[in-house]
Image (cartoon, rainbow, N blue to C red; front, top):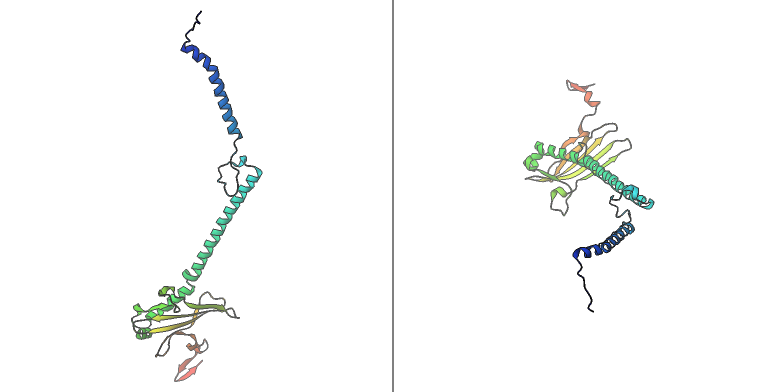
Length: 227
């Protein structure tokens, strides 16, 4: 007797496979859920914290790490501001301030360029240049100006400068001594002179040659000095 095979329709196959597919789908989703639950994020340290993880999700150690990182960053900002302020203060005091050495150097050079005696010895005032001490540097602007600033026992400040001038005819050496008396805001010239080799010293300022306050009150009549 021959076995009888009955054809199975597509509908019956699908109906039989549905429970199997449902079990596999549930198992896959359940496994993914377990993986996402068991997977851990990277621990937050002061070196890798980018602020992405919310504060309330951090552990006590991670909160301490974030606080350390933020404190360090804040300290860097403060140091940067202090350094910037220090550089700005130095530039103002040494370059831009009307009472800086650079300002008095520029004023002294301007006076030399306009002085008739200096022009006669050095040449055209517009072509007179000034620079600091001679160095191996070929750039004149880089030559340092020799200067000292000190305070005496009476509280008077003394600014002494020494630099060089060059003109079409000659070169010269400039010496300047300025004094700021105690309680005053501005320096006053004690002397400003130019030395050109082979010529007499030129004084643009010489406080020692000026009459004192007592002598300034005297006047002459018929060749006699009167008080």
